[in-house]
Image (cartoon, rainbow, N blue to C red):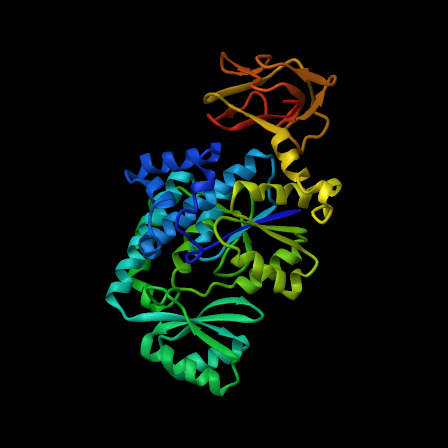
Length: 413
């Protein structure tokens, strides 16, 4: 079973969208630009790292880049059983789960980033990573330092992040050294995130959350505040209202992923922070963890989920097998929005009331370019490839959106 996780602020890189420009998933960037009235392509393609590091830009760029990668993975037919995101990444997870729309996700991230930037201008806070110390020791050091110094991120068994006013944080670092911490490193961030110093940003975010329509999540979201899976629409307003000033319980999130028997954990978006933490966490030692940053990384997912091509990288004659498979597998997308009808190639049976339909190919179907394989309303869907039709990715007689995956096939081009 697949679990998808999404990175937070700090994973962004200058030019991180360049490898995706020719991929259909990059169309999301143009949609985001139209919705926000802002040039999102510039942010992902040209913005220098100094500009991209600013809180409001870092959050929007990371959020959007992660959704581009998610869209590419979904086009290949991969679906997770659970999703989670680290801090900002939780908003990506909410969109991925269907709990909020893409448009509402953009709106929330824009408000969140701007509000947090303003909050950092009002205070002099920062954060520090603590290595080689347990949670209780870090909590003691913070309490000795002052009332506003807190554990912001419980990231893993070996990594904790503390947050607070600069003076209190410096004091906490001294206490941690005296209490046996192996190493402390101040982070290059603009403020004391996930602490009381973000209260003004929280107020602005809550007002924006009130205008959002939360929906029942199609995929459970393990949230930062309590490290528990949630699907009910009513839960998300409360959880996101608390998240900005609450601890990110990522260690407990990884434990919950293990408890839910996730066999493969896939980090989608810039960086490898979350997959790296997972590889070192004892509870996930039996779980395969990978990161997808570029289109070339999509082959990792094919190898991870297909035993026939797994563990072949060390054999020189198989080094291009993943790439070859990726280029042969094709997904046919909806040309418009409307009601989807599949062709006569499929038979449908309702043997099991717990699934919408069963799909059975009558025979092995060899397609030529231009063969009609279905329609959306009255608009015919023609195969753009020559090859073998393999199956359906959408439910016939249901509404689909333009660009939504409908069929998959193996091309012979």
